[in-house]
Image 1 (cartoon, rainbow, N blue to C red):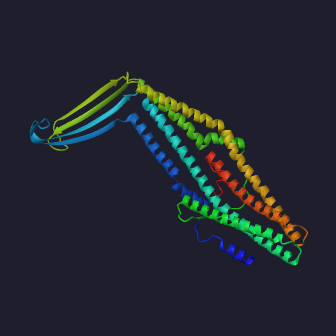
Image 2: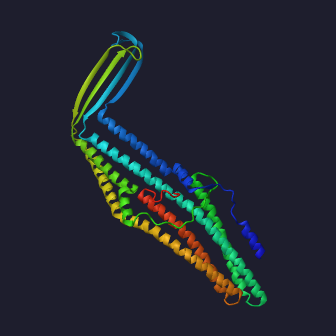
Image 3: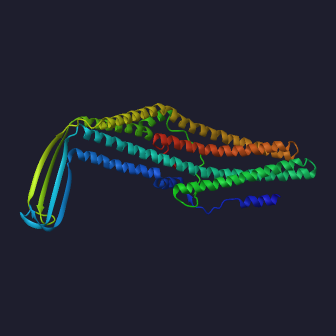
Length: 426
């Protein structure tokens, strides 16, 4: 039975033929492939052009050039050449500039500036969110690989315990139920090993999907050094999140944009002054140089009544402004709690990893003692099984705590919008 179990364990190891990727490369590849980040970059580009359009509308007129060419079945009088002709053509150049819009242009400049700032902050926010998801998948591969090693150690210990129990049973120093207890533990260890294999396989496929590599990808191990102290205190972290955190910057920019949009809607209650000019030429050929006429027009309009459509759009803009303001205020009120939760999650995971390191040392020593005591007949099989279970749990707890600290750090950095340890691997 022991030989069969050893062969079974050897056949369960995952293949080492998968390509490996570093965390830095994974973050770079994921940023190019993540739909959310691609959308954020597109929003920045759109906002840049909207800003340019608002600025040019302040000082430059709109220009339109057009031409047409018509052929008739019989001669028609052509004003361009002053004689009958079967063809007629015209060229036209129109220019239009809004002299006074009630402040709408200024409001549009302010709105597009706020939208551009929101887009830049949104790009930073999405970049860190993409990095957070990528790191979660990366750490999942590493933790599942280490948990697979834990499962293999559990199976090895179960095999050793079974061998020791069989020796004692055969020698008459223990009852047959001792070996049955170890057979049950062997079955549990085999199931745990299968589950660990499956978890690692799925984690590699998820990481491969994140970085655009079909068939899964393996993660290069990281520095096993303990998680360091944070370089900033909690109060400073809260203040930095409020000052430069991308989520809070987006909320403030959205409020300014909504306020500017409301001012733009208010401009519809004021008169509008427009100056326009045009030049037109007539002839009998395309791009003609015949009769030409030019004009300049100054128009003043005052909106009086449009069946409450103006009031409806103003009400919608006012509601959007109030919602943006409430969202910003709610985020700022929750900043202390949210940042504290992320900050304390890192500190707790870091402390858990330190305590788990000592716990693992204790569990290993207890297992060694119980193993020796059982072989000497000084303890029962239940004591040995308890020591084996405690050692397996201590190993798994340490693995989970180490990567929980890394993931908590990534979450805190996403809230702050910056790396806290730029000199280290991200």
